[in-house]
Length: 362
Image (cartoon, rainbow, N blue to C red; front, top):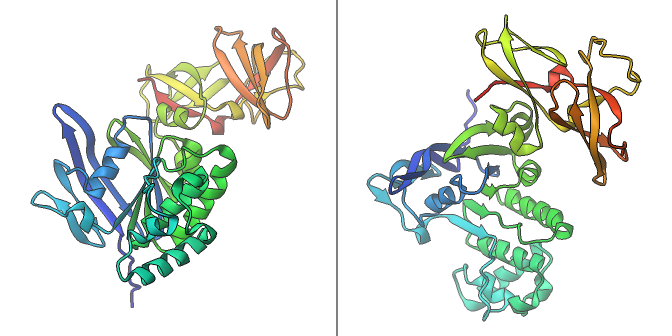
């Protein structure tokens, strides 16, 4: 006897949205399961917020279909009004009603008698430790408190899906992490499917069960945060999550020659120009070499000589920039704790082959 399969809470099938000749969202498909948090991650203007507006019903797609719990809510011949969709919305602007108390703001989304709505509002506020503020007005609350009130108001209608458009960007760093964690815990407890929009990779990595990396209206890569970070589809995907170093080469016999040794380049024809891309944290400074030359080692390959251009202490690590001897390329390396070599110092660098990505040069 086969086990029953859980159906997607939200399913988007090939939606496209155009404004005149400009295509903002193109052939986008996505599934989100109950209790799952998916982050739409990408630069400003890539179509993230428009995608949320299409799901919420604030706009209608030109092509494609949107389903909630296997029920069509928007398609070529049907468009469910926004107020009828089981969808909650949270934005950077918390949009609390200034003339209503905290309890009244939350109760606004609840049906029933006045006393029942107030009691339900109190229960929801208790989940975020704000029941003491039921009779306060929004202007008297801190930014973090307003964010939590906005959350429980969005949850009050018991939505199947929560759409969040950079809701934490207005909070200072001291509060942000704790409030994000509390918010996610409540949403997962309710079994709500969450679609979060952000342009901050760190936020996506911290919050998401799945990241959908967007560019120019399309999802270019989708998967668990670990996989999206460690198996990027192209150079831009590497660079979106962190600084990226780049060494140029050409392919000969499925190998690319560089000052750091040879790198495997399977799938590329001879003569193809390629980029060898790697992150600063994967650059190794070979302190044992003591300037004695670029002898290859089994694990690290060939060492290349660089001259320190500048170094900066960033708190938990130091960033050192090198001008490479072979062609003047600037490479960045991060070193744990404090390491601030003087400009002009000679150091040999290596890069682990298993931490590099080989892409055809665009």
